[in-house]
Image (cartoon, rainbow, N blue to C red; front, side):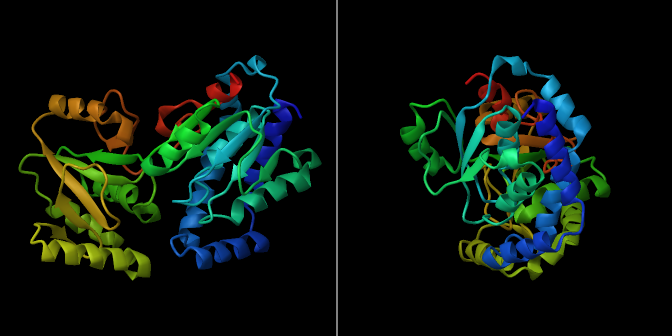
Length: 338
């Protein structure tokens, strides 16, 4: 299968995902019943992001044009351990392995186990040469390289087990927002998408905001209250109520608008339904802080631009392009040099 044929097949998959398909809809409902965080709305949001950012011919051709595909003959076996925090979160890795001509052995997350196999089946029905390109396994063995995504805890096991193989091992990361107090209500609403999309479970979700001293939170709290439908989701509401109770019992100062709890905290990572904030004195000091913590930051959303981190405009954190590599590690270059 040539590179052009592989691109054709991915474009075909993108077209399939834009049609009304009863089998796919059934699998989305099944995914929700298996994992209530994966609502139909969120799954369709993830699919739309894939079809617009990943599976367009011009974007795929522009992506591969940036590399020398003559450096590899492909044909290697690549183990993939996929995360399951948001729908189809490991799809970029699957595409990268496929385009570089390698074979995938995928340990799929039990939180998201139905849709990806179906997408591979759709591609195989179109081109039978896909049959051996992707296999789903319970345990990885007999591979030439590995890309594994997990938590900081699981990363230690990954490093011990896969350390002798060429690898990319990803750990916990998160997104942060930087405000200067001049944002409009529309900009804060867009930031709200970065906070609340997928219930805040993604590594590109904003879990902390940096704000200037004496920042007035009124507009922020009023605008993000527009996302209060999240409080109707049972699992999100349970997390909200649990955190609210903790803050009350511990007499911890917080802000509450019914769908998000704001607490001042140095940590970049916040609980579900909570958002950390921290005051900064000036942009130079903030830049130093972001540089120091760059290994924990997936991206920064702001009207300002910062060095050493990936920058996105408000509302765009969960819309990465093909060149926006997780943890800033170029997986295509890694796969081409195996």
